[in-house]
Amino acid sequence: MNNQAQTNQFQEQLQSCRKSVEASFHDYLPSELEEPHRLHQAINYSLSAGGKRIRPVLLMAVANSLSSRLDCLPACVAVECLHTYSLIHDDLPAMDNSDLRRGKPTCHCQFDEATAILAGDALLTLAFDLLAREYSHSPTTGLQLVQELAVASGSTQLVGGQMMDLENTGRQPTVKQLENINRRKTGALFAASTAMGAIVAEADKEICAHFRHFGATLGAAFQVVDDILDSTQNQEVLGKTAGLDQTNEKITFVSLEGLEAARNRAHKLTNDAHSLLDNLPGDQFFLNHLIEHLLERTH
Ligand code: GRG
Image (cartoon, rainbow, N blue to C red; front, side, top):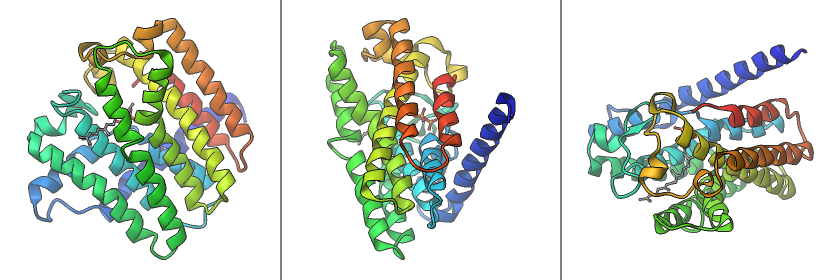
């Protein structure tokens, strides 16, 4: 297969993964007809507002590469619920104070602050409800999935990373400190997504750990690219407020090391992710293309 044919095949697979995740939302989440309507409207608004669906796509790609016997879709939806909660709360006035997300007004702008907080809370809880409910026929797998997501989203990882990010506002962290914040704030959910793909596929602990490491490395690359895009793209392309890091006095790899060094860092981490994938079992055609796609993305 030539390069163009491979790219086309990857793009088709990517669209198909996204579509199946989005089509599953209504299977697993409360409808807007359910009370309280305003809360469920806010949840559905933020979830269906778009988004690249990278974390569920990663989970599905790993599960598929290991020929999972169990359905990975509930876990994919759970990860996207958790991610969407983090975005809703991250956009709040007390956090990043952002009014645009996924090309639309943020949840608190479209509804109100209290509703946005509750929509985030509900999505966070729904993620674990979904895992417990949909994998009850395979309790060991269900428990491992709950543990993986709980650790990644808790006070030492996702929420902890956000706290450290806020504490460093207006300060100049070292490269090591910034790597540490990013590992928690962004890397942890990427790592959980790839590990959860391996857990759904009932892979042994060593394989799960290797996929977790791969996800963490990819998450680190993703955050550097995010920093680069925040400083170089406009809000129409990004679908979210551009230049927010500078406005909020957030130190990024771009402000710390400069654009060129940040680009080199993203390339190095991307190469590391490819190398980690070389040592993993399964057909990695899709994941190898996804790594490049994430490096070359424009939003
Ligand atoms: C508990 C009050 C409270 C707040 C927690 C956990 C949290 C707030 C924030 C998480 C930190 C965060 C948002 C990190 C940024 C990670 C990141 C680069 C998000 C953007 O991800 P994309 O580009 O978004 O995949 P889409 O919209 O495409 O899904």
